Image (cartoon, rainbow, N blue to C red; front, side, top):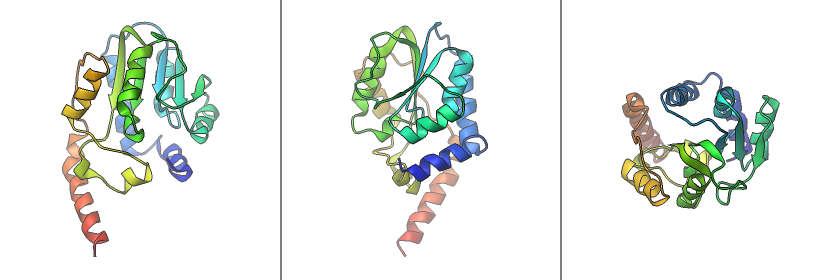
Length: 195
């Protein structure tokens, strides 16, 4: 992701509706999921909005490839930070009771490898939470600016998750209330750029 997009993300994450909605979603998942006691890891922690939520629940590590993103995390008080990519994670097997990959795997070339690594480092009985952008026909400038490699449909994410070893508890679309407005905006944007 470009440095200006990371700066923008940090500036917007405390007030923008999308981040606040995602924050509410993650807090709801955490409140309604039986997560074993232990350490947590946010893979692709970005500038730290979700890492700070995990820190309220226990010992939480943040991992990201971007030095700039991690500097924002550190500036905001996060201390257990690791600079690394999602494949070949620098952690022992069964290290974490919760692993999150929140809008992360769409950025990497080999999403299956990253999910296998998440499976490897998650304790038996632990929880892995994955969120991704949906539907390739919704591809827009945001995807380009954030260097996304793909968008997903449920069956695709299900198959990758199962092949990585996971037992899926829940697989659903979120933000469905904004689906039509986003679709219309993308169609209008494409038509305007082709003129």
